[in-house]
Length: 152
Length: 152
Image (tube, rainbow over all chains, first blue to last red; front, top):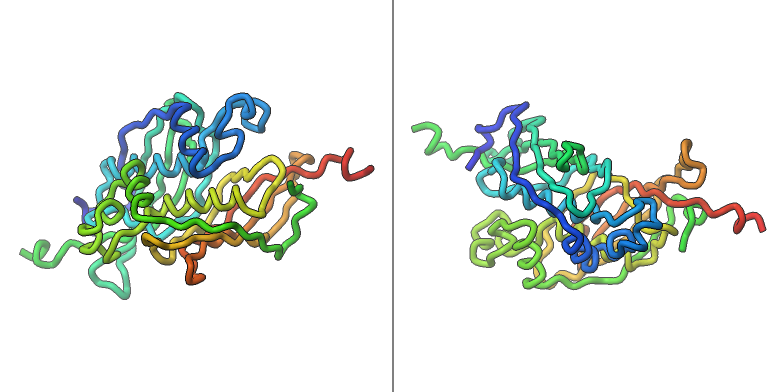
């Protein structure tokens, strides 16, 4: 478990890997993003993507799971208040194996709440060829180390 | 089906509604965001949220479904290349009923591809009290109306 004081700008955290397959892509799309290029291989071939691709929100959800299971473990959980500049630079296709690297960009103690700070981190989801498929910069609330522990 | 030419800055599109319950929140969290405040009511009571809340990525996925089923229907599908400034200003709790409004902010014909344009839209997900639970500005690729149709 990591506290605000454990982070430093430039640190990089890694995740495990998740292989996505056709069944996962279609199951997510049926529930949350029922568009032809996420649901049906034949229809997808005629689309901009020239084949079945995962919903970007599916990539985002898998990224979250990889983060939760990965090395980046703020005390109190991964508590995002939002983010900016999420991009999906290339599609995710069946058989892709995804992993995430998180780089600490900025640390800001909270002015109003002395028990916490904000950690700004860039999270890059890569495929098996080390090509980025999603990049986003998130702002996380992270608790400061309790005084009782750090002072004694 | 709407083409780039059908959009104008200031237009507002609406969605239907989706009621989220405890079972949905836990099922999504088990798969994609297994953190105590998304999985377990008792643990959630002791968290920052003081009760069970949906993963932000679950809210994002439901928002996508509401968009796909809503009035905003670009020809070629809702094709996001990314976005900026996504925020979750307040948590989503069991029993909340969500809907989305999309406001067209900016229209930009593609310089490199004369057959398409970019539509920048702010998508606000509201709960049953009309309070925003998610706000994001997305950039969508939208095809231009084929000349054969618009000229005849």
